[in-house]
Image 1: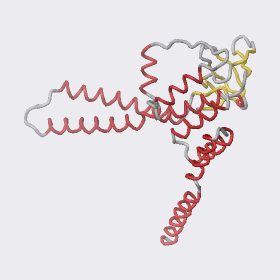
Image 2: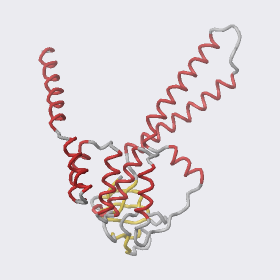
Image 3: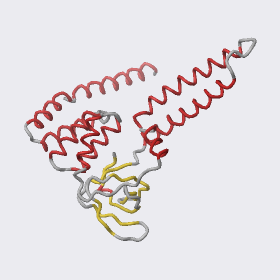
Image 4: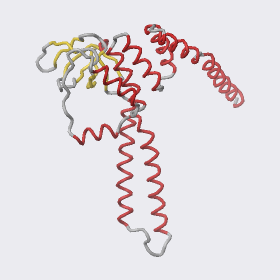
Length: 248
């Protein structure tokens, strides 16, 4: 029975490997880039999107998609994909520069509320892409903490001051918190982009109906069937149709 299980697992792994090899990534990349160079941006998008279904963690792919959509004047989708690239690589300067260009083309762009400085710092520190880095750092601090405890325990006198030990505990807890929050933000994307031109937005308090310009970044507060409660950059909260937005 054990041998049968091993054989089945081997076949499954082998089948998956064959399936992955059968996907012509390089060919799709070449075709997409060729169409882009020929200014056939709609065809380039088709191939880039095909690759994205199998390689959702490729920041260069989303950067290329953003460029193609930008050329097609689909500002919402351009901003969406630039944000996806930056989500994977926060220091992607080319993506951030092109994102700024795309945002400048938003018609009737909404003003943004200024975040309190410490909230802004916290959001920058807990970017989902930093989750693995914080995890590694927390492990290093934890091992260092164990080393200090072991060193003091096996010496007749305390060699390393207790203050250093307490400081390491505080650092470890802080880094662990950053790791957890970054990982949580990675598991649930709370931001989305309006990809529909003049999407209908119904304010939660007054019930007043307005339109939100394409390319607007919104924060998802709550989901309910085919509608989503979101907050706009200017702080207003209301309901918008799920078809009008795409999650980053």
